Length: 431
Image (cartoon, rainbow, N blue to C red):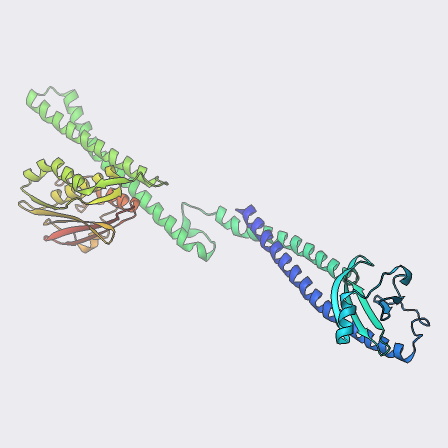
């Protein structure tokens, strides 16, 4: 992360320098173009006045100026040039600035000069004697005059880059060191940036949940193991009759199954927690799955004298069939467990606005408002004493919520004590 901060800082700095330098050069270039035009115009005004007052003005004076001065007669013959020997110069009648000067009196143009092999600014004017006076200055002359400015700009750019590198190192160290030194076991005791407070609060909440989860796992696993150990010890050390032996064996068998189910649920939740990629999705028939679930739980439904109504006709969507089966199984099983004798369960599944809407409502014991907020927590059970009146590990609804989230859906619960409990789930239909 430190190297990334330095790298990004340098990239931003270099890009800023490049943009600033190019903008500055463009401004300087435009300003110099304007200055060149103004200087050439002033020189031209003076030269025309001096030449028309003295036709031998160019023979009697030496011009040590950056500008090139050329005198051309009406036939295009070069009579004078202060930079190039006039005898080697070709006829200039075809030069665009000369042609334009004869038409408009004065003409300015920028073009490539074949005489000096450089891009050049030209200003030409016709005199009262029908001669053409021409002033010109090469682009290289402009660059030479600004070498100092360009050199200074490059030097400043290098200095800024070095300073930016040093500051990036210092800044990244100040940013990274407090993060690296965070005490994850006691996140709220760290003295760090205010912006990290929400993250530290989440870490603290997760620590508490993990601690509570560990305590609950220990408690829930210890209870059946204690029973199994106790009855196994009696069977090992006592000479018991066949009837009691069968009774104790059945208890050990039930507790072992309870333990295995609990471990399976814990492993499944852990697996869902670690799911970083998308789950395998396919086209599934919700009608088929819900009927299968009710069929599997039929023995509990009959034993509890509960009526079940399924309102679901050929609902198709995309999802993971195994997980959707697990979701519906847990919700229907809970509706049976926490229902009343001769109670009822209504299951509605339909598509609403491209969402598979699942509603499972029972006429059971209900849930208080205080408990509703916690029912999706791992190992949370409404019977806080952990008595065995209603069997369960308190992991079922946690699994349900995980499955809904993995499918990109939402789950809500409504309940009234001793009246009803209703779970509403919305899962995207998918492609």
